[in-house]
Length: 139
Image (cartoon, rainbow, N blue to C red; front, side, top):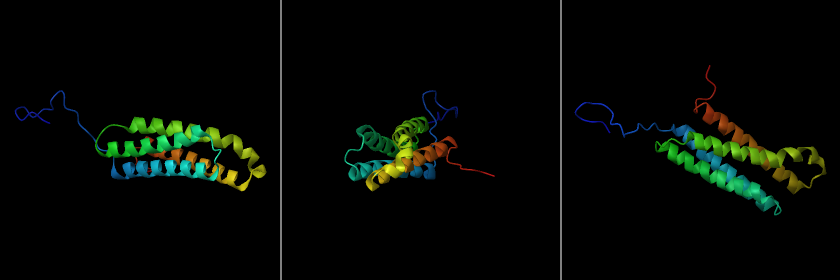
């Protein structure tokens, strides 16, 4: 959107920088895993907390949306980071207090705890990946 006469950027035009393909794909996959693990936890343990279940579904759906929008050039990294931070806090709130009671639990409760712990790890890992702009550890 440049003015053909003076070759400068028009004042109302914004330069869109696309999210890298790998970062957008990581965000979409992470969102799918979060939603899938919440759905699986609800299936394994029917009395699974509704807040955690809906946080996984909505957070996963939003991560998928942020991945697609970021690839289209819409600035949404901050929104994705906020979504992942909230989801990580909710999943950690569900998982961390239960770690001490691991041995007293039934096997299906242990599976749900394991799913919530994996969800926390995925959220924190993807949050770090977004913070580094998808570059990872560079020597």
